[in-house]
Amino acid sequence: METRKTKLGFDHPDTLTSMNNLAFTWKSMGRHGDALSLIQTCSTLQRRVLGPDHPDTVSTLQALIEWQNESKSLAQEG
Image 1 (cartoon, one colour):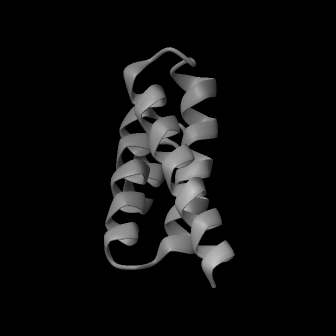
Image 2 (image 1 turned 120 degrees about the vertical axis):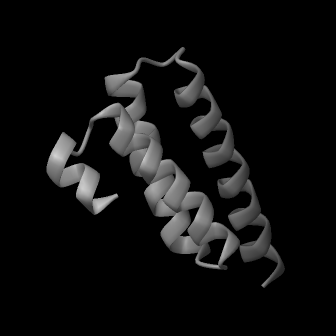
């Protein structure tokens, strides 16, 4: 992702795809806080760059909402 940021820019659609993929990778590795923060950033940038109705924006927002709900549930349990 860092290479894409450098070569393409931090808000290029390909960079945003890499950002999204990294967030999912971090989540699968148990880095939930890092993943949630990154997916939030990605969602914000996608809405601005791609628009709110773009399929990538919608998909990322759905993941963000799901992860936020998971995080709230874990906090209530813990």
